[in-house]
Amino acid sequence: MSSAVLPEFMHHDAAVNRCWGRLFADFAGFQVAVCDDDDHVVAAGNSIPFVWNGRLYGLPGGVGETVGRGVGDLEAGRGPTVASTLLAMVTPGHQGRGLSAVVLRAMKEEAAGRGLAAMIAPVRPTLKDRYPLTPMERYARWKRDDGLPFDPWLRVHRRLGAEILRVAPRAMRISGTVGEWEAWTGMRFPESGPYVVPGALCPVRMDLELDLGTYEEPNVWMRHPIGTKR
Image (cartoon, rainbow, N blue to C red):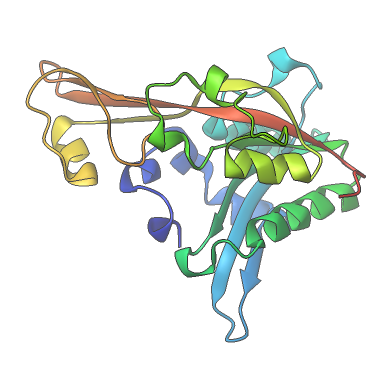
């Protein structure tokens, strides 16, 4: 399902992939699927519980570290204090029907049912790829005339009671050879430097001498207090 929603390069964060399979083996209750009348999955969400001290400095660096901390806490026998969303997806043919909010509510209800203090989320703003040169710190603060966030995905979280904590500057880190990046994007990279890539929230940096392309994606940490009625 993610291949229909995310750019190909987003499937190649090594830190995320290292522990992703543990979500379904050890944290199955925190994974959500929404099906249509024919039992086809049309929306899904992934989350994981872990220990967070409630301070900004204690937030994970990004998605990969969040998964790693959740797995590490489980193996060490540490009881989690919060849950974190990792990914929420709606298939293209079912977008615009409020299913993303359904997925978030389901994950939040699971966290509440486990007695956790909050649900946090490293949010990947859906329109940020249209403004790849704008720093996330500024983009995340853009507002509509009604005072709600400019970005639709930030807006969904806000309407469910979430508040912005801070930007996660390297929520995803994806590295690959120049050839791999060309295969992932369908682009050519004739010289070293930054490139605007379709689907990327900020430029991808290419180093032809090292045969290396690096993408460090910023996300926005948001906090949903448990018990918020929205």
